[in-house]
Length: 120
Image (cartoon, rainbow, N blue to C red; front, side, top):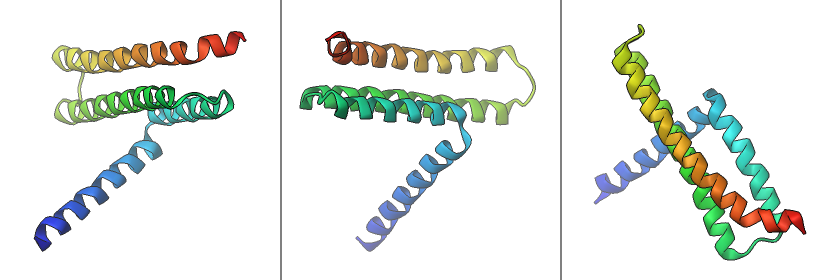
């Protein structure tokens, strides 16, 4: 039981370290975090509902997770094949496409929450 708890604590520490590495080194994560903070501030300003908060946070997390996985795939691809390779490029493009889908989802959520509020 002690080893299990120790293992979980170590796993959490690695996760936190990874999150800070992303924030420290990746410009796309930094930009998306800044945009996320802007929408969180807008949420307070417009006093959005509990359900709107849930969807907004879900959208933010979805984009950050997609971007994080995309970054990991790009770093791994560059490690495996540092030179240009069409197959690696294809893999990277597909990975970037997942971020695009997440961003479209997030824009739909943000539009749904804020459009009427901004027009009033």
